[in-house]
Image 1 (cartoon, rainbow, N blue to C red):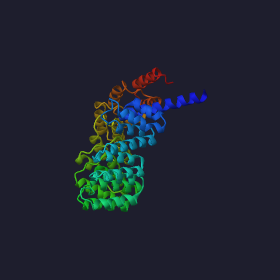
Image 2 (image 1 turned 60 degrees about the vertical axis):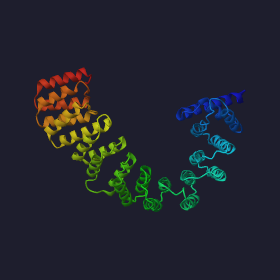
Image 3 (image 1 turned 90 degrees about the vertical axis):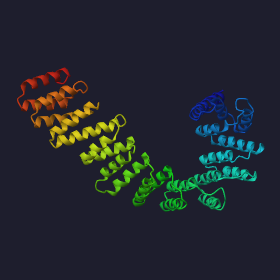
Image 4 (image 1 turned 120 degrees about the vertical axis):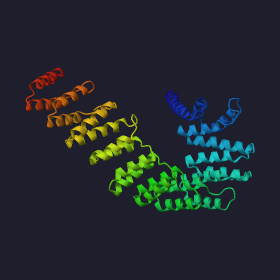
Length: 411
């Protein structure tokens, strides 16, 4: 009884995982749950049974099913589905190269080079006209399995075959693999080889190159590749921009942030939250007022609300510290008009102290009236107001503030 209950709980868990994988892949959740729960010896028989049903007679169900099994952490059963498909292709004498390539691409995900090689050899034995796509699929599998020798040997074979010559995808695969391995020299060699062959690397390959070089602290190479990418008219993605900012920060060149922001503006590049947050911290920590204002112009309203508020507050604190009251007030008005609110009492207190230093008591009153509807003053803020009004003998405002404190339940 205990074993039966445990088995039922296990199958229910498998069903839950299978359902989640099915939802992610858009495949048949009932069939997926069945395969997950069945013993491995039944997988091929089940696939054959389902393939003969009217619902799946088109035969295209196996691919999303294999993907879902991998998501459901059932790689062995996914391989059995791939083997079943291979056997079916051979039995039906299918001479289209694409389904064989698809099986091999799945093998790359699971690093199953042995099954990939078997599929490739079967396609070859069938007399199928091979193409660059199937070679690239096998090459990716070798690289994912860490078999660099076989990958390079396959590349050399491709070079000597008509219709199967290396293409941009071939070089991109080597660049990505050596980036993950942390081999800067090999990355650069394959990048140069791609260019010499007349190919422009993809955005993913440039990402591998630039992030790889930055990780290795090969900043000159990273900068050179980045500049070449821009010259090709390729717009950097958020990962590349983050790596570029990291590279510029490490080089500690003058006007790093200013130059970076200018390029972002000129190129109309999109900044993600992480990059905007990092730039905001750099600008605020360094007190770089021009850069703060420039970044504030760049970020779209509603996209980076947290950073937008931080930048406004940073600019306000800068002007308050410099006793530039008019500029401080201008920023406060723009911030509130744009719907950005104050986030912490310290920012309010900095503004209050600035008004007291300039003896602009009426303007202080206007400011307090404007923020009272959405910001509740705390005890320390009231203490600053009481001390200021007492210092300047503003008794009426002092008594009104003390009364407000009592209503706010501060002693």
